[in-house]
Amino acid sequence: MLEQEGFEKKPFEEHADVYVINTCSVTDNADKECRQLVRRIQRKAPESMVVITGCYAQLKPAEIAAIPGVDLVLGAAEKFNIVEHLSNLTKGDSAKICSCDIETVSGFNASWSVNDRTRTFLKVQDGCDYNCSFCTIPMARGKSRSDLVANVVQHAIDLAAGGVREIVLTGVNLGDFGKGPDGNKKNSESFYDLIQQLDEVEGIDRYRISSIEPNLLTNEIIQFVAGSKKFMPHFHIPMQSGSNTLLALMRRRYKRELYADRVKVIRELMPHASIGADVIVGFPGETDEIFQETFEFIHSLELSYLHVFTYSERANTVALEIEPVVAVGKRHERNKVLRNLSYMKQQYFQQHHAGQQRKVLFEGNAKNGMMEGYTDNYIRVTTPYREEWVNQVVEWTL
Image 1 (tube, rainbow, N blue to C red):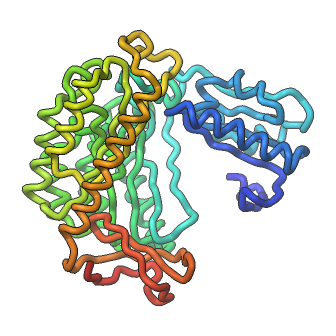
Image 2: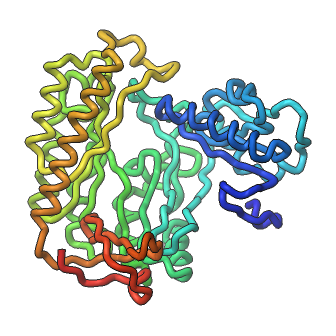
């Protein structure tokens, strides 16, 4: 939008007239990072405009407006009016907050990454109707809503015309795709409908499903991916805990038995598939016995890697009322234990495929004379840079 108005995009390290910081608020660390970035800009370019958008901006606009150097705070809906807001802004005035009640936010705004033509992240869904007890995302992003299948297909066609080879489908709760832009189900489209139609788009070689809840990952979707030439054998399925006791406290919509079943079905149909999981450690009520239960459950599953998150308290969440609270030191210890387990699983997964031939899509970024790419099942490959391999799918022996 800014480029259409004549602005030129600059690397963050360079001097710019306007700095836009898009914030997360999943962890406490994201809030701190925002403050650090504003301080850096203040030192480097005190006369430049600083705009804060994203989840932190929606949840705590007054807190952000009080940070010295912030000029404009845009909530979930207002960030799409950034050009208009900037034109009415004068440096030196007190920070302007443009936000609204998240309950009133509707409409879907499509977006995709444009920095790398090899792989593009395409947002097809936004918001979430789940109310997990640890999570602020529904308060920051509003109700679940999505694009129309026809629109997503057109975006894929346009991206293919621009040379993009791989599209990663993203959303706040991707498997809930199908609710219209106003958040109701009247379109009767589903995530399964979407992937079927995307599979037919000419020019896109690969699709990945970024993350999908286990209760929304149906056998139908798994079977389709298994038979598809374009959807990669790669699933990322949030787990959060391997204990039914803790899953109930977290208000998750499944039990560990369903999670294990999803992994089993994928492994039966695609033994070579990469399966990743999100896990939270140190959630209130996680005793030593419950953590051990999670460790043993993960150990028993044929997972390829973990994303491990240390629980951090979030304002206005039900989890604040749950006891006993886990000591912060113990949370970090448990994080380390699961990251070690993840490393072992990753090593085993890669060694298990050693000697196999797999297709690798190589990226254009050269680092110290080397280039990187990923196999269909998400194993990273590094090799000396060859220009003719950039943005190409190459048969590779692991």
